[in-house]
Length: 277
Image 1: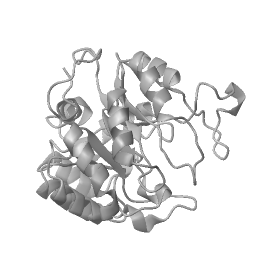
Image 2: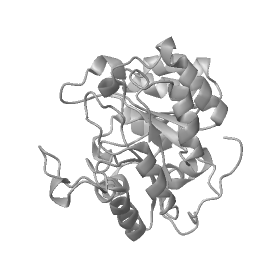
Image 3: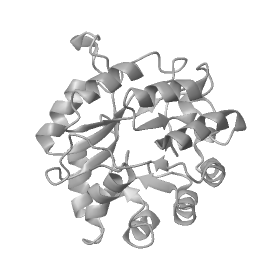
């Protein structure tokens, strides 16, 4: 990014930055419909997330997932940007663009960054694209020019989504071809964990968020690398509402991470990456 961004977030007063939080419902959705149809957990709106993270004394990166063909319309980018701006003391908004189905994705990215988006979430499995497909490269070039992050789902998926799109090896091409684009590989990348670790270790613009799994189940090599050569390349993420930040943090406290690396994982690396001040 081109310079530190002044936000309402007081980094001295937040204990952590959760870099992976889903906005699952619009404020226009009726409250009785804000439940996951299978698992029953609540589907949060942006105001719900602001209230929760404010109460936890934490900040959070929040985003929708733009996948109209597979997930439906859900909540729109514009609503997320507008409501997150009203909660800028705790929320950092990322947008989401389906690079296959949206007309002129680079122009859409420009407009959304103008609305306040600080990065973009991609889910190759539900959006149905290989991240290194060169048809998506004009969008990456624009994100690189704008100085915003690109966060990609990697590894295991559920439902009817196709795992083949989520191999992090495709992001090695993106990282190499766009060295000025900050890439975040989301989740322990099962069954390709070693690939993700190698990319993060060898590409200066590639990072990992630790969301979606309890730390008690992290692969040993992920913990080992987080404690050593990737100590400034991995970040706390919960994947809320699938996993609560409280559960993640409790299990992180009991996991074999070194005390000296914990502050960077919980807050320091994300604060630098997002250039918060």
